[in-house]
Length: 341
Image 1: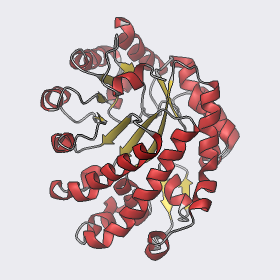
Image 2 (image 1 turned 30 degrees about the vertical axis):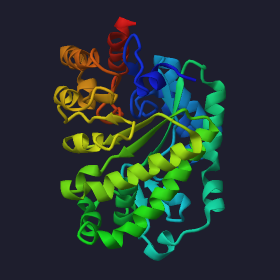
Image 3 (image 1 turned 60 degrees about the vertical axis):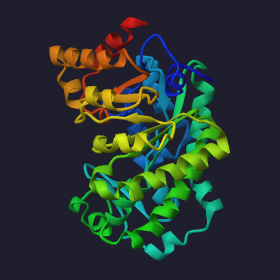
Image 4 (image 1 turned 45 degrees about the vertical axis):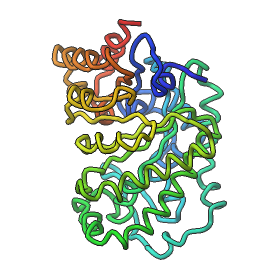
């Protein structure tokens, strides 16, 4: 199956950019809020397959995006590895203190897959209901990004323990290794359940100094890509490294055959000039500009589409849709991006 998004990610020509948005299933949609209330908790929503499938499909019905992305969370990985993960109202994730020895020696892989089975069921149910012309994106966090939550217990304290870990990376490596394996397994299972595109979120990549990015970010990424493709074939993969666009030229030299997601703070035009033409780009509308709307939004869309004329391109945000985003502004994006179709 090669639809607009998967074609672009394989470097093929299409009549216009592919279009989807990070966090496209979320609180800005009244239909999502209704199902979220029905579920009662975030984890219940994630791990109840028919509810997760429903909210995955909602933005496709409303906006006709080129791809659905399964409703889940990157923190299903530590949860499946045995670390308690809770979502506190108006606070975000809270993780219990990391038991390094238990996690780094984890070997209960059948149990791991059983815990995550509802995610795969949700993917299968979504694929059954999703039009054949739509791609279905599975995803995971990167080893480093997931490790930051595991070490710091969430997003608090400016990731002080994560930053400290970078001073003794030999001690950090066993955690990155178990995460590399578990993420690979999770992505493989998502493809086998029906996902035909993958995205790897490296949301906290910028915490890693430039001189450590090869060991901490790119070697594990390379291992994941190699492992996944050995098992499921040449699946299209997008890597979203937030805040490290200056390292994308180094990443490009590795010839991993992936697309790169670009955040809203990066210079898209400069990256398009620097990166090889065969690397598809994804991005990078500022979510705050999407909220603001008006002429500023139209100008930002036009600037991105100018870059998109000359290479394989996926129109997206530089980060996720904000909860207070007006639906009419999302409709404006859809209309302007599709004018060339």
